[in-house]
Image (cartoon, rainbow, N blue to C red; front, side, top):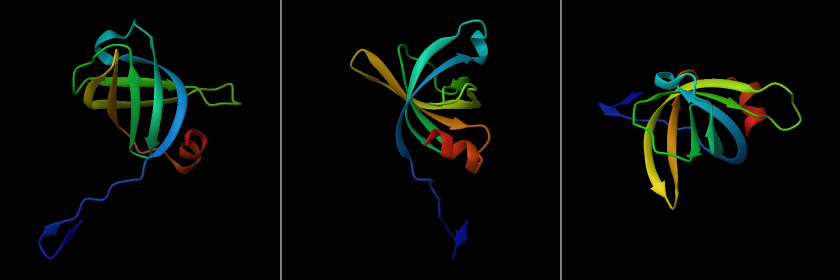
Length: 107
């Protein structure tokens, strides 16, 4: 969005959550790993991993929804990652924005 020649960037609010998920990187399709989701917005996810991943890696997440048998499956790319103790936390930019129903299940 532009306003008088100045670009205004809109950001979605993030909601704190605690969800279990499994993921694999596009480069390593056979390796399903566990992670934890600690915050979420319609366009991104904050996740905690057991190992460091490369920025730009494409990731596929299967997120468990409490009280439901089906997982929510999303795709995205790792935008940042840093070490926190013996774990790694990172930000994932989703390939597609979450619809309202899916977002409400996860937040």
